[in-house]
Each structure stands twice: as C-alpha cells, then as structure tokens.
Length: 423
Image 1 (cartoon, one colour):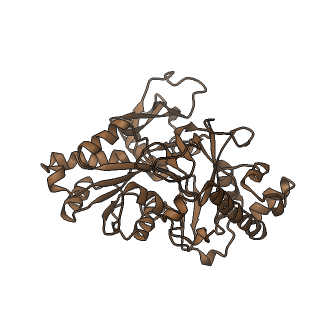
Image 2: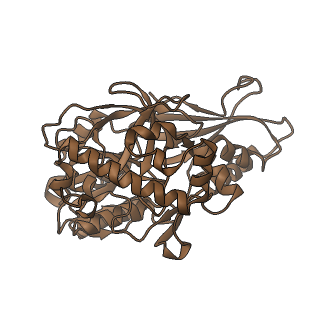
Image 3: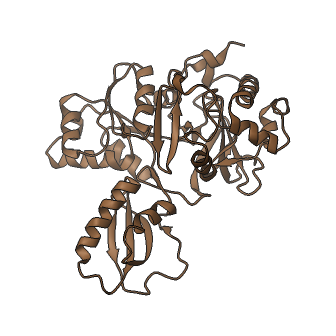
C-alpha cells in the first residue's frame, strides 16, 4: 500500500481505495496521532488519564469508543481556563500558520500543512478545476472560513477573488468584469447575487461565466439547487466546522456527503457517546488525524446519520445523510453559530429590557434572526433602543438582526432564549 497520507487530497488513489486499505490507513494514523497528542497536548493527556486510558489502549477506530466525547461548550470552557487553546495544541505556537477566533468565542489554530482544513477534495468533487476564477464570499476576518476555502482552491490551481461578505452591487460587478467561473459561499448569498445581476439587466448565461458553485453553512433545499441549475450553474454542498474543517461533501450523484478518508467521523449517541450504526441518528463526533491540534472525539453538536452503501461515483467512503438538528444550545444562522450566552451578553447592556427571546426563521431561502423584547414602561425612546440593540448584536454576534418590541406577557415564562422555528 502507498503512503496515502502523503498523497494529494483529491487524488483518486485516496478517494477510491478499498475499505480494507482505508481502515488500515486510518488505524495507522490514529495510533500516530494519539501517541503524539498524549505526549504533547496536556488536555488530551488529562482526558485519557481521567478515563484510565493510555495511548496503547487506542489501536483502532473501534477503540475510540473508550474515549469520552469533548463537546464544543466544554472546549470553550477549557480555553477560558487555559488560554488560548485549552491544552489541545500539540506543537509550539510559533509553528502555526494562523490563529482564528470563531463564534463562542473559540480560538482555532491552523497548522503549516498544505490544505490544512482538507477542502481541496470537496471542491474538486464539486467541479472546480485548475484555471477557474473563483469568487470566495466567506469572511477573511477573524473566522477561518475564507482562508479555509482559499487554500483548498489554490491547491487545485484556481485563481481566487477574495471578496468576503456583503457589497452585493460590487460583487456582481466583479463577477461580470473578471469572468468569474466559480463561487464559494452560502447558497442564499449566491441567490442574492444572481437576483441582483438579473435586476441590473444581465443575461446570466450570456453575460456571466459562472458555471460551478460550492455552498455550505446553510440548508440547501432542492428548490434552490434547481433554481441554480436553471441559470446554468451546478451547485454542490459540503459540511464542516471552524474547529475541524471539512467533514463531508457531495459528488455528482448528490446522494449524501462523502466523509474524507483523512478524518474519522463517527455517529454517536448524544448521551452515552457510544458509536451508532448505519441509518441511526446521532451526534457527529470527529477525531482529527492531525498532530497540530489533535481533537480526539470532538462532539460537533450536529445530528446526522450515515450509510455504508457504495456510491456510483467510485468513492469508497461512508456518506453522511444530511443534518437533522443540533444537540447543544448553539444555533447556526447564516453560517455563524449563535449562543444563548451571547444573547445574554447583548441584553445585559440594556437594563430597560425586561424579557427577551431570539427567534430564528427562514424566508425565501434566507435565515432571519429577530430579537423579541418586552421592555419597561418607562422607556420613552424605543427607536433609539432598537438602533442601539442592533449595533450591539452586530458587535457581539457578528450578525444583523431585526428587533421587535412586544407587549408585556407575550414571551412565555421559561421560554427558550433562542427559538429555532425553521423547518
């Protein structure tokens, strides 16, 4: 067998290797990573010692069931107690390429490895090729998303246009002027750009060169996929997180999300952490085969199931069968997680707010977040309160939200701080 973990991430030798070779590869890398993590990451050593485990007790993927799950909320608390990485960094900080801060807040290190976040294979499966001019609309500021995809695209030989978020008019102009052939971002923002281009009088298939899109961070309903196809754009989706990078991606069959061979993804019981079988719904639990930041059995909080059935595309990995909900208290809105403690932080600035609830809905393929408030009767300038609150929400939660003041008694006693009403 070849030394597959040195192979290019979108090489067919890696994606189409036999189940036996894939298992051998993962077990070999798992042993290496566990030994390194135990020796160099204090949090991993503490986790193993608390469970009565030594590195030699984890020889195969099946042995991971012995290791407790570390969830995102716990990671945040560990980082607070031992900043900045909670004891999980297993190399010298000076060896890192970049350090990001994702919502939580959580610090995310990036190692110096080429395509560290493993998105190149996902982008290749979506149809991106050398020479494509790609508009990357994910943020390059603080959070890792923009540079995650930037590096994957560069591995493929694509030319990247780092537009980031917003500036719809300018983004349409860039798309037209540069002959952009590929798009990376959320599906709702792509629809916004296409509608704006049509509004400006562009014939999308004559005046734009866009042919392929990779979308993530939001639901991607079939109706939206068809809307893109009618405009001559093939759009495929992927799944990952800021903490661990790529975890799944579509191929041309569009029948689930292929799990990359170079990461271990288990579906586990959200209560016990016990791995579940094909078709059973549980939490996505990740083990990184990476020495820099060896998160071992990291619970993403996302719920899914998987299949072992073969895919006609020839890739041999298991496939995730979509996301069906969340375990933790975080809710993803327009690609960003929002948490009750963030909402509390915002509202704490305004003592005139008696009660609040955050409502998340979805309209015309776009997420909408509304802060619903009950305020003290003594509040005179409610418009100023709404403006100041919107500014505070943008500062703390990095998202725009509507503000709705409702009569006292509208918000039930004990109501969830964040109510996700999307279906």
